[in-house]
Length: 254
Image 1: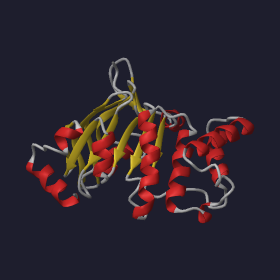
Image 2: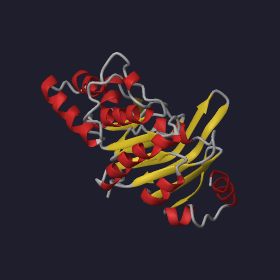
Image 3: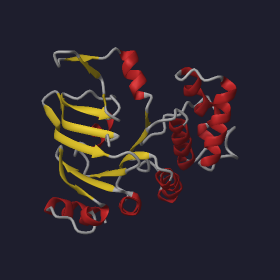
Image 4: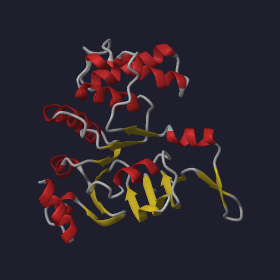
C-alpha cells in the first residue's frame, strides 16, 4: 500500500545551519507516529516540511503518493508548483500548533467556519453545521459563542483542532500541541487526540508527552541533531531503547 507520508533523504538548511540531515520517514494510512527528541533536534522543522510551511533544501516528501511542492516533467526534472497548486496540496493536511492562532475577534464557531468558507468555498450554512458538529465532538458545545479571550488554553487548542478537522484533512500534524498549556489542561487536549487516533486518523505528533506516545503511538521516532536515531513501536523505543542517546533523553524527560 502507498504510505500516507513518505519522506526521503530530507535535508533542510537555514543559511549555514543544517537542521535536517537526510531524514527518512514512512507513516502508513491510519497510523499514529509520535516524534520525540530534545529541543533543536529538527522535529518541528520536519513537521513544517510535511505541509510546505518550510521548503526542503534536498530530498522529497510525498503525501499519499503525491510529490509535495513539485512536479516532474518527462525528463525527470523537478519544477516548483504554482502557489495555488501548493495551497491545494496543503488543504489535505491539517496542522495544530503550540500556539492556537485563533482570530481574537471571532467566536469559537466563527473561527471554525471561516476557513471552510474562504478556502473550501463551502456555503455558510453547511460550514456552520460542520463547525457545530466538530465543536460538539471536542466537547465545546457550550462554548461556541465565546471569544478566544473567554476560553482557557485547553479550550482554545480544542477549537484549533476542530478548525483543522473542518477542512477534511487526510492527515493531521500536531506540533507540541500541549506545550503551551497549564498541566491541568493537557489531559483534555490529549483526550481529543486519542479519540482521533481511535477513529483512524493518520497523525504525526511532535510531543514530550511520553504517556501519550506509549498509549497511542503505532510508531515512535527519536530524533537528535537532525537525524533519526532510532524508530519502532513504542514498546521498543520507549521501554527498551537500543541507542544510548535515546536512553539519556528518556531518563531526562521521565
